[in-house]
Structure formats: structure tokens, C-alpha cells
Image (cartoon, rainbow, N blue to C red; front, side):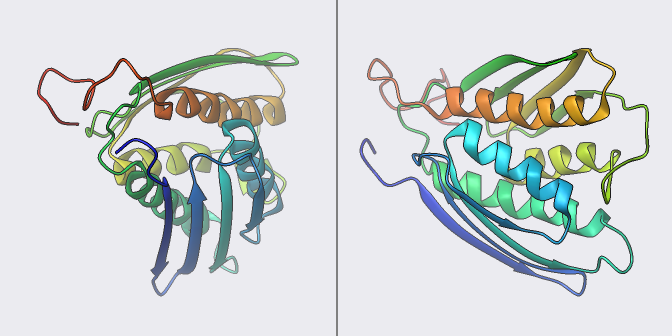
Length: 198
């Protein structure tokens, strides 16, 4: 419904993580991120800021084991909040894409808010870690987001050597693509699908 507030609060508690996410798709990019992993906080701050999503994430995870459960479960809860905030998807553009340059890195992201989960991921790093975050966990985050939000995500590194720039470019490109996809378009009646639903 046009003009409806597109906000969600989502919580998830397991033996491995305790997470609360607050999301406003029509925000100004204000963030409050506390995951216990400094570099991951930095990535989610960039995601909120560049997607113009107001985002608060608080996670208490089993970091004494490693960062895997925290990063993956944050993807699950954020994706679920995103799906809830989208509501009926009436009037949204549905598709979004962005090619983002960040110094030496050039990252492409494209999304379809189709109701069907899929992750196409072609990003490789030269090192194993960025701060306390394993570089391999980026894929786990985007996979979890895709399947809990029920959206199609493609991420590809077109060029780049610096792992920090590559990872940050991926989160920002994803945010920009989502920002485009969630925008309302007055020409769209209902949802943008010949099926009549997304």
C-alpha cells in the first residue's frame, strides 16, 4: 500500500547468537551496529548509509568459537527483517543494479525482489581475514540474506586487488542495488509481475 511505513523489528535467539535488528527502508542511512566484530560493523554501517536504510543491529554471538555464527545469523535476521519491511511489494521497481568503484576495486551487484532466493557470487580475496572477520564469511552473509529475504542476488568482482576495498565495495554495491529495487514507481499498479504477485 502506497505511503505505508516500511519498517520491521526482528529478533532471533539460539544457543549461538542473540540478535535484534531494526530496519527502516525509507530512512536516511542512520546506523547503530554492534556485532562484536569491528570489520563487520564497518560493512553494515556502509550498507545502511549507502542504501539510505536506517539500521540498528545488536548481536551477542559465540565469538569465542569464531565469527561464523555471528555473520551468518545476522544475514538471516537482516534478510527476514527486509522481507517483513517490504510487505506486499506493491509499487516497487523490483529490480536493482549498481556497479560501484572503490579505488582499485570495481564491484557489480544486481538484485531481483522476486520471492525466489538465489545467490550468484563471484568474488575472491587474496587473504583469509579482514580484522577479525574471515573473508569467506562475506559469501555466507549474502547467502543467508538471500534465502531469508527470498530475493535473487548477484555479486561479481570486475576488478580489484585490495581485500578491504573489494569487501567494502560488495556491501555498498549491494546496498545501492537494493535501494533502487525497493523504490516505488507510480506507473506500477500492484506488483511488477505478470503473475500478479511476488
